[in-house]
Length: 473
Image (cartoon, rainbow, N blue to C red; front, side, top):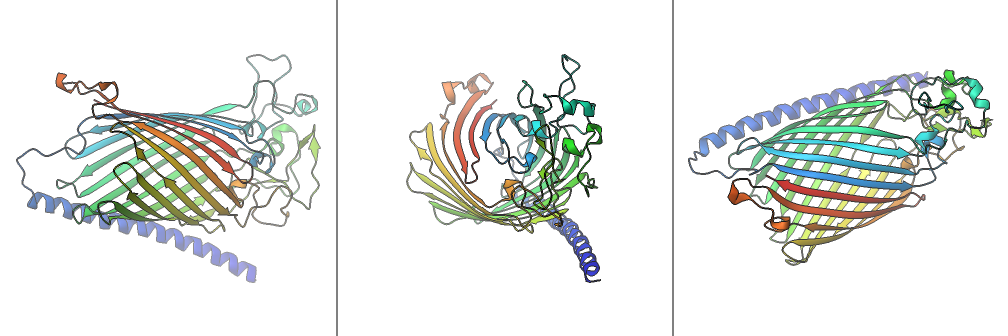
């Protein structure tokens, strides 16, 4: 009886939380809509300008972005927390800011992530090429079904790797943002829409944003809120697919959710303390509901024997986590201009959620303006995390538990990230490609390159290279 009462209370609590989040977003939207109308009326009454008004953005700006991420580790969640985490990710993207008039900007962002992962190859290691196959080979390692018969499990090639190396997939993502600024440039608002799509996953989202400066632009408040709605294909490890001819572990149940919804709201305040010092504070609340576990990540129990087929360990279950999650990060920034050449930028964030995860992040960056055109900025970031209530290494969970994961992203760890960046931004543009006098103001405004090395206490290591080339015309 007590168990039933607790379950009913949990359901009521979740329903109440959802209602509160929805009502909060509605109230905030109504309040800020009223602020927009009041601000526009105030501007139209107080400001009657016939003289030239400076544009928020003079010309079209285009940013060509690229990042390369290389990772190695030995705790792949796909294979239960023990396995190769080698991964490469190449991400080209383009960001275009278009001035629609003196007050409004339209921003378009689009990119594609090309990812190869050794662990992805192990989602279904039983899917192998037919001997002597060619263009008709079926290598369904990460899809929802497989046409391979159980007879293939008896072949020596059934480890699934082959000679092709890790499989690659692409994720397409983009966003569209409209921003409008008041005549006196102290207030702006914006709306945006976004999408993301890859194999087994589709997401759409929308958001709103507001900014208000006052005290002669020495103080500023920012608010933004967003909602994302995801649809996921239920991709299971190969041993849980009936098409592979294996018998799933006793007690295995299919997942009954295939969506994930995320809602967030963020508020920040910044203040100029004097000509050299600035401080800011930020607070976020994020609420997620739906399928929050990764359905192709394996879990092995310590109270059950592990069976193998052709040296492949058959999992007892897939990762299972609660269907709701609330996150509450709080951050603080402090910037100090030591001199005209040296700037100190610091950041601290505390994170907590209702899965038991808590974390502290410290970040420091020291830009050095070596000349009018050239800046170098060394950086360092330290992160420490306390693990989720639901995490345990491979073969440490009990089959009687309700929730469990062996994903080391939810474990206790500390990490350090070292890096350095370089920015070239001459007043007349790089190579002086400025044709303003010819009526075609094309300019190669700046070029930025940075490198970071990431190291985690569980052995995960990564190298990150990022590039950004900015043009205007």
